[in-house]
Image (cartoon, rainbow, N blue to C red; front, side, top):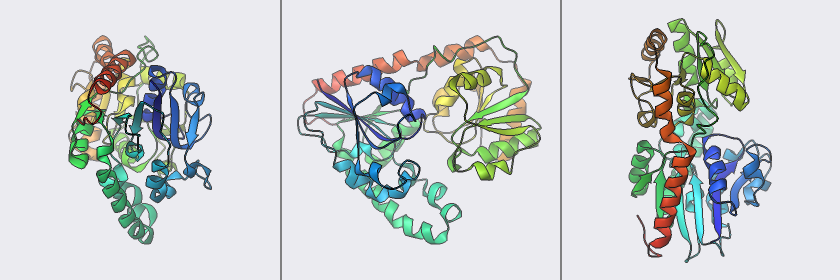
Length: 369
């Protein structure tokens, strides 16, 4: 069986790329198609693949400014030649779920989320405060057109898998399709507890982009009187640097080993924004440490309130500051937290994918569910 893996873009090792890394093990002979590829930005398992890049890859500054080419994504995606493949597996958070597959092939979409900025987070990415009133007004009809295309091509997928209950609801709302939940894989063999002493410090590991709400957490930490370390890079960094100081620090990128040490020695890891799933909270719990997360989205699947962390009731500085103080005052059971995280292991993910593929390949060629 010839398999093609399709991923939106390969420009860093975020949650979606960690999923793709495991899929490369599940499908060792698969070719990989993507809009943009920056060599060395992901993992060796991904970079070793035969990688087919779209026309967007060859446009100026595509490695860092791929979103400026959003209007071209539908055309670029539909140019991929997938003749000769029996199974297409897309890991989609933008456009790749809309690839055109040959009549005999089956398409399994592992949906990280429907396109955020086209559907319900336009203002977070392209609102007037982000890109200016004029550019925002120009982009709004373009993104509305992308949303229509995204909806109208939902039938190209034979079966959807969703990463959380939250994403399953979004798939039903925007695509009018059902989905099966297969939680993303977390390397529970690498992220493990350690008896190192906990330091009086909270932790964020995140891309520094608007919807992550790192700014809210920094303000709440100051109000709560607790220290906070922020790991990550992104376009929000210049703004966030203005909120640093007095025990609140931005430390940029760290290695996986350094991040693991920070998980193990922090009071708790903080997830201030709404995530579709959120691998970081599960990595922290695999290290036996609790999570303070906004009580929406994927955190409802991954955090047991009062057992493996706390769910913040609303998106406010006051509520988050109160939860930080509460987390610091509690005693947490490392063993119980770790045991919960093991539900999200790579082995569990692999079994879920293999079962879905077997069911899909056994179904009639025109089956959709």
